Length: 131
Picture 1 (tube, helix red, strand yellow):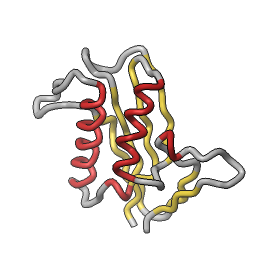
Picture 2 (picture 1 turned 30 degrees about the vertical axis):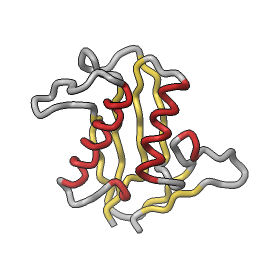
Picture 3 (picture 1 turned 180 degrees about the horizontal axis):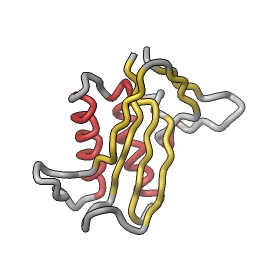
Picture 4 (picture 1 turned 180 degrees about the vertical axis):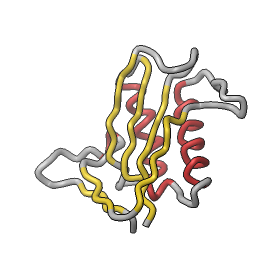
């Protein structure tokens, strides 16, 4: 295993919010730039927030696949959300829970006023660990 996910009992349980507190890594770090709901031309492919989250994580998966890794190798996420609110947090928690179950990566969520392109509502970057 390239990294280990920990949630100390001395801290709250963050899993329902879609993240873990600590990732311990050993191996080669792989840095993945922000992925968003882009189509093959780089334009935003869908308008719906939940659909953008799903497509962004699919694009993250594709980026990792290009270097022989998969989502299980991700130790850290940084998410960027336009107009962050609790409903959007619930969407992200569901998507991350569906991918990583009870051992999600560590994550920092950032509420932002805007992202790089018109229509972008969500972006995720990642640090993965190659064993």
